[in-house]
Length: 79
Image 1: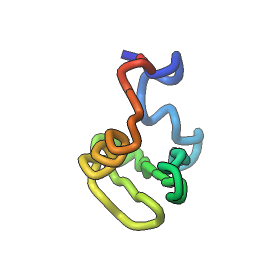
Image 2 (image 1 turned 180 degrees about the vertical axis):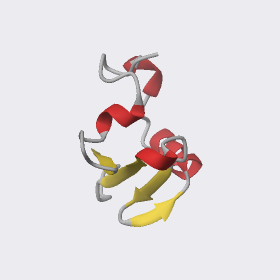
Image 3 (image 1 turned 180 degrees about the horizontal axis):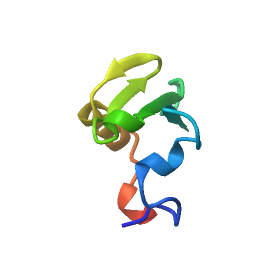
Image 4 (image 1 turned 135 degrees about the vertical axis):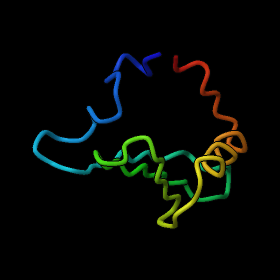
């Protein structure tokens, strides 16, 4: 499945001639809380390994998913 009709492979988000890249999203925080910045690091040599940061600190994909749920973001409407 494609998300928002963008690239079909993660490596497509890494610029030609580069070995790594990243995708950064800023999610609106709950009222009275700061926004959440999520970064997924992409490395061509280990494209299947998910490397995430949330607000500058490394975390798991499960932690990112938990945060998305807490913010009430419905990912299924992006498919």
